[in-house]
Image 1 (tube, rainbow, N blue to C red):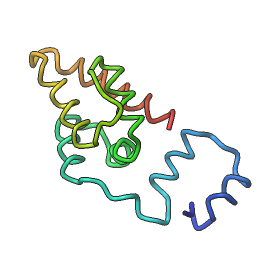
Image 2: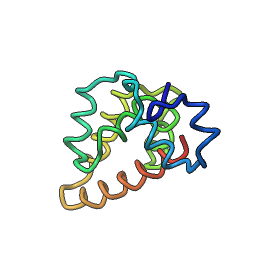
Image 3: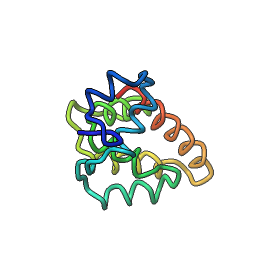
Image 4: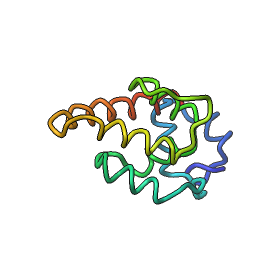
Length: 121
C-alpha cells in the first residue's frame, strides 16, 4: 500500500505520526482502492445518520473492533463478531427505538462515538 505514491513503511519513517491524520490519509489519499464493503449498508447508514461520511463508514466496515466498541458505548448488547450489516441495522434500530423528539440527541451521541471510536483504530 502507498500513501501519496510513497510506500507505506517509508511514509511512516519519513513522516511525523499523528494517528488521526494518518488514519485520514490511509482512508482518503491512499493510491489503492479501499477494501470493498456493502455499499447498500453504507448508504443506509448515511440515510439515517446524514453527517456520517463514506470514509468513516469504511473504517467501521473494515474494523470489527470499532463496531463492537461503538455498540458497547451506546449500551447495545453485542457479541465478539458483528458484521458491518448487523452493525448498521443495530445503530438504526437504536435510533428508531426512541421517540422522534429524542432522536436528535441520540444522533448527536452516535456521531460523537463514531468520531471517538475511529481514533483508536
